[in-house]
Length: 70
Image 1: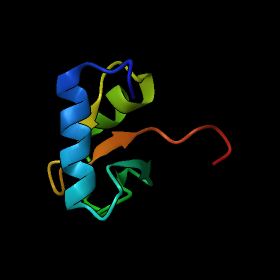
Image 2 (image 1 turned 90 degrees about the horizontal axis):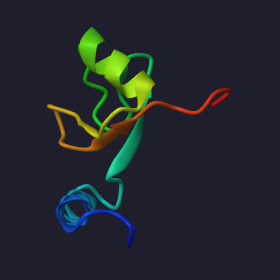
Image 3 (image 1 turned 90 degrees about the vertical axis):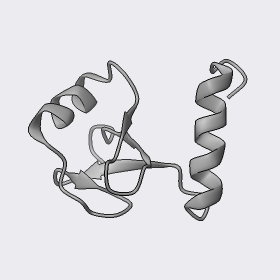
Image 4 (image 1 turned 45 degrees about the vertical axis):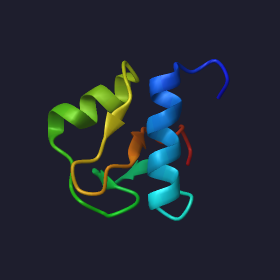
């Protein structure tokens, strides 16, 4: 966390406090692992590449592509 930019840390803390401690969730079957809202194909491709942090439009959580075998 200390290596993240201050703006990213601040956003993470805001999300964590408002979402019962779950700021980062995996994408599960094309949906947010927090609110289960389906994500657009373009966002799924970006998450798979891991180019940037992606935010769910439904709940505001940070989305990550699950590791292989998870």
